[in-house]
Length: 353
Image (tube, rainbow, N blue to C red; front, side, top):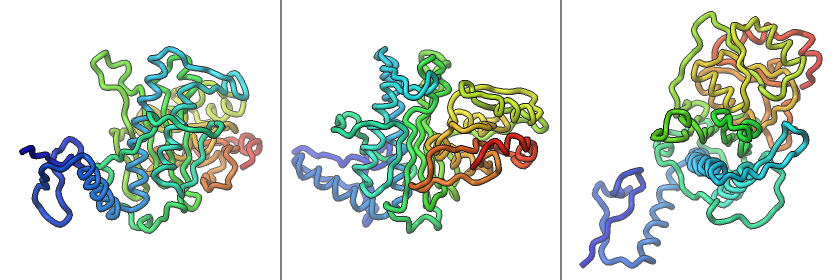
């Protein structure tokens, strides 16, 4: 007689704990069909006990991890498949295309009533099954959903997807600038976000584990990193590497910075803020889009920071909103008011919300 043990719903474990019993569930001599039916039933029972938002975040976490794998695979294969969109600094790669298909299709299959807005304008078509991720990160489902979001319905949510934030840097080998961004909005407000860094640790040697995923929900917190702050009194500004102009340089100079970091990717810049590498993110220009800021904004706000446009206006993320952040971006982990107070009036008058 062969005895089979149920597969676990806890990462790394080997037992299923019944909702109704506190004992290991065992079954004997079940065929493959019967065991699959049991798995499906158990998933339905588990899913029914979690809110839409937390299930979406848990799924987006696993989807973002798969996206990171795709990004690394495209580099490893050696053909980036680069095409120019609107300019020499506005590029699209094979990774952009594959990751967007993976994220949007995976989410749509599990949450068909979502509104999903991705950066890339891709033609409709069949998506390879290898790009689909149907898992979910169980550790997230152990977290309580903030009460204000417990009754949210699937159709109330808008998901903003940047499949490869920092594409230009990706093509130039500046891999630590690259992130995958999945932001979740409710009633126009960014409330949950996932940032995957495919090449986190890539300079740490051949034995280093590549990649990490940061996630957060307003009212719950942000996870996957160690929060640090720039030393008191230091003003380190992070700003664009490839989209600078006179407005940007004038605004940065007005901050009286001790140092200026010019890097790619909005997600990367917010990570610099929360890990103590920079004190403010200043981008006094149109160009940044809602898919660039939705997920990073959540992570920053969840740890007490603030992100707005240059005028101090809150960004809106409802499905009808224009995609461009036409009045730029101003963000800080601490002392936001200091940086906001130093934005020149000439810069404000040049940027219309």
